[in-house]
Image (cartoon, rainbow, N blue to C red; front, side, top):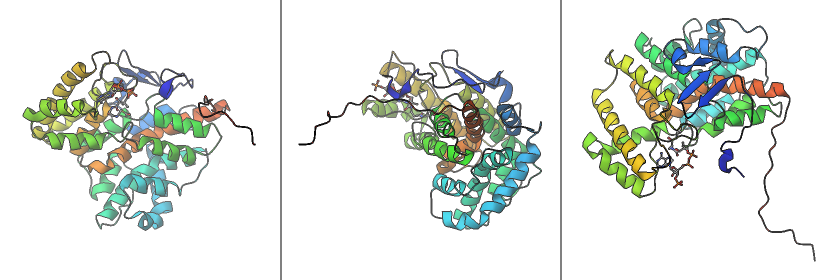
Length: 361
Ligand code: ACO
C-alpha cells in the first residue's frame, strides 16, 4: 500500500516532468527557465495543447482573447448569483455554466473562464461594474485591465505572465490527477476542470499562498521570525510555503517567481520592507525545518514566492488560489485530453479493512 499514492506511477505523459532530486521542471521538452519570463501564457498553452486538438492555431493570442469575450457574454447575466461567495467558490459556481464538451472552442472557453470570472466577481464585490475583456491584447495584460478598469503597466503584466507560465503544468499533482480521473470517464472538459478546482482549493495544494502572507503578518518583523517559527513547529503545525511531495531540493518555480519579483522590484512595484521580512522568514524557516526533520529535506516551495508576487501585483490574498487556477487550467485541459485519448478508465482498488460481513441471523 502506498499512502497518498506516493511513488505510484499512474500515467504516461508528454506534458511535463518533475525531477524532484535535480529540482528540474520540464514542460514539453523545455526547462522552466526557458519558458518563465521568456514566453507568454498563450505560447505555453500552445505548447501544452499541441497534438491534442485538430487545427490548433500556431498563435493562440487571438483565439484566447475571443474566448474571453465569449465567456463574458455567456456568464455576465449570472454574476449577481455569485455575489456574497468567496472568490474561489464564485469561480466554481460560474464555471459550472460553461459547455461540457471536448472540442477546441470549448477548451479555449474553459481556459479563458477563470481569467474573466475572477476580475468580474472581485469588481462586483467592490460595488463596481465588471469590465468586459479586450480580445486583442495579451491574456495577462487583460486580466489586470479587467481587475483595475485601466491598462496595467507592462512590468506588472509581464510579472503576471511569468507567474501563469510558471504554474501552467506540473506533473501529476493532486488537481491534475483529479482532472485525469474525470476525463478517463470520457466526461467533458468542464467536468474535469471543475473537479480539479475542488482539489486545488485545499491548503496542502493550491490554498497555501494566502496563509503564507498571514504568517508574514503575524511574524511582523525579521527579528521575530526565528522565535515564531520554532514555536509553530513545536506545536506540531506546518509552515506554509515549505515542503513538497516530489522536490527534495528547492522548487525551481520558486526561483522563477523570485526572479520575476526582482524584475518587478526595479520598477518600484515591490515593497522592500515586505521582501526583507520574507527573506528573514525564509532563512529562519529553512534552518528550523532542517533541525525539525533532519531526514526529510523541507525547502521553499512555489507558494512562498507566489504569495509575494501576487501581492505585489495587487491581488487580494483570498484570490491567490483562483489566480493559480487561471494558470493551471491550461495544464488541466491538456492532461484531460491526453488521458481521454488513451481510452482507459482510471479505477484503482482499495483494501477493505472494515469489519467482516456477518451472515444475517
Ligand atoms: N512544515 C512543517 N513540517 C512539515 C512541512 C511544513 N511545511 N511539510 C512537511 N512537514 C513534515 C510533516 O509534518 C511530516 O512529519 P511527520 O513524518 O512527523 O508526520 C513530514 O514532514 C512529511 O510530511 P508529509 O505531509 O508526509 O509529506 P508530503 O509529501 O505529503 O507533504 C506538503 C507535502 C503537503 C506540500 C507538505 O510539505 C505541506 O503540508 N506543506 C505546507 C503547505 C504548502 O506549502 N502547500 C503548498 C504545496 S505546493 C503546491 O501544491 C502547489
